[in-house]
Image 1 (cartoon, helix red, strand yellow):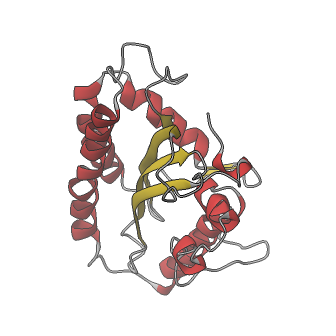
Image 2 (cartoon, rainbow, N blue to C red):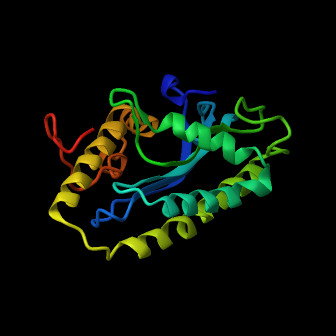
Length: 231
C-alpha cells in the first residue's frame, strides 16, 4: 500500500466524511464513522496548475464502530446487522473480512482490551488486488464501483446508530455510571492519541487544522490510578 506520510514531497488530495458522537448518557454508546478517499499525484511542472499532475495512486478507506460503556447485546447485534446488510450485496465475504480487520485495529495493546464492540474497518481499496479480499470480491474495482460500496457503508451509519441512541438516551443513570463512562472515555482517548492512523497522519500533515484532527476526542474523560472500578 502507498504511504503518503513517507512521501512528503508529493502533492495529495483527500476527501472524506468523519462523524464521532459521544452521548452524555452512560447507556448510550459512543460511535464513530469515517469514509475517505486519497489521491496522490506527480508534482506540478512549470506552468502547470498544482494538483493536476498524473495520478500516481488512489484508494478508499474507512469504517465505523460502536463503543458502549454499558453493553446491551441487542444494540451490538443491530449495529452489526445493518453494516452487514450494506456490505453483502458487494460480496458475501466482505463483512466478515472487514469486521475482523476492525477488531484487530481497534485494540489497545497496553490495556489488552478492545476499544468497543467493533464494526468494519478497511483501507487501501483501489483497482489492485487486496490482501483482505478474495479476488472475486468487489469486482470490478474501478473508482466508481468502489465509491458505490463506500457510499452504501456510509448510508448505513444513521439507521445503524440513531435507533440505539433513541432507545438509550433517556435511560436513568447514576453518578457511579457516569464515572465509569468517563473512565471508558479515557481509554478512547488513549487509542486515538497513541494508535490511530488518521490522527498520526493528520498531525504529520503540514498546515493541518489541529482542532479538526482532534475532534474525535470526548469533551470530558477521566483517569484514575488503580481504580477500584476495575480495568
